[in-house]
Image 1 (cartoon, each protein chain N blue to C red):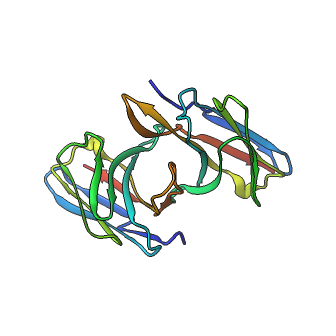
Image 2 (image 1 turned 60 degrees about the vertical axis):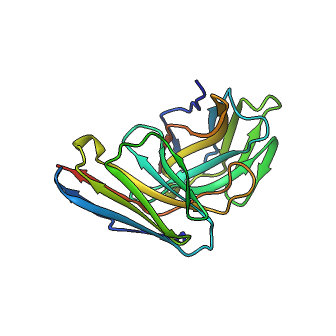
Image 3 (image 1 turned 30 degrees about the horizontal axis):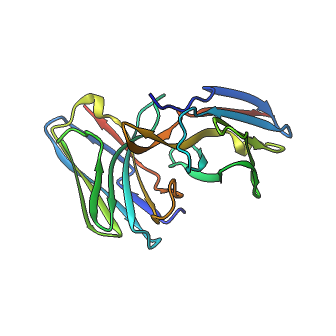
Length: 114
Length: 112
């Protein structure tokens, strides 16, 4: 148990569907992240929120829309995805401070787009 | 282009010491080197972090040479449960911006 919980664990959706991924952290951290993990590729940072404000958006397509209503919750809203968006989506949290602070990850949502 | 490079896979046997090296030529001057472990169906989990020379904790050691352009994760006396993917992570300056650069991961398989 890392203190970061992601739901659902698995998701299958069609290209016309709208779905949301949820992340909740119980660690009292101020920063939350969405990462995409595809097979045989490095982790790709998608979004970073610090104190509920988006501080980084790594040129992610608009079909991915993040939301951070408070410092404990993070959502990733999905719509009109493509098959190449199939991947493991990981949420992480950290306590900002020195560079390269320790990240705490959830177990991820395995997404399949048909 | 800043990147980290590590072997794609490694095999070893129970009880052996395993060393996994990561190269990171463009590491930021003041940044730390961090290693994570990932099991199937789980997110990465922090193992160890260091800035220079040697760091040791209850699960691993991290060796960092003076130029800091590489680092070696050392796992003493591995067991079957150490079978996992291991990632190095460093910060680098790219186009005047600080970014965290993940390696592609080393899949470690421990055999009985």
